[in-house]
Image (cartoon, rainbow, N blue to C red; front, top):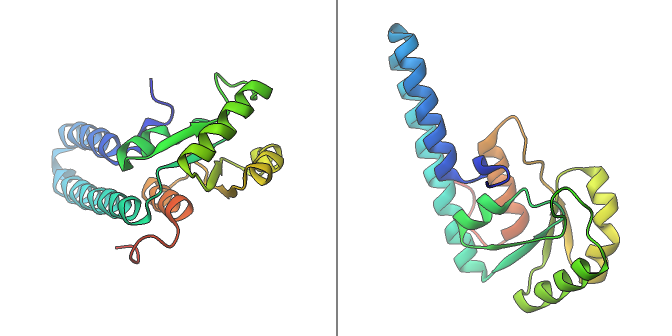
Length: 164
């Protein structure tokens, strides 16, 4: 199963559509408002997905590192590789770190994502040694669309046109 699968715009749109259908069935009088909000969300998710794909293509970025493998669904949706250091909730050991350094060098990754300041502290030395810029992007933000935009900005900074 994907970790944090809602970071895929397609997954998020499909799940939001399923919720909207259930809400409309439960409250037919409010269905028009629900459908309108769902259409707006679907449109915004589609625009964000296109903006991220365009930015990834323009930037030439192929990969990014992540302390925790939270961002794989987004990476796949955008056409990038996530190089995760942590696996199964366990901190990486020396062999994992060495393999990650090799993969980072091979792909030209330049950013490492972390979920919070505690993770940032654990990842700082590795990121510095690997020549990566650290970016904190919590995958559990209250506004999933804002989280998707934050991912695009963190990983593909300067590679895209202004956000739609």
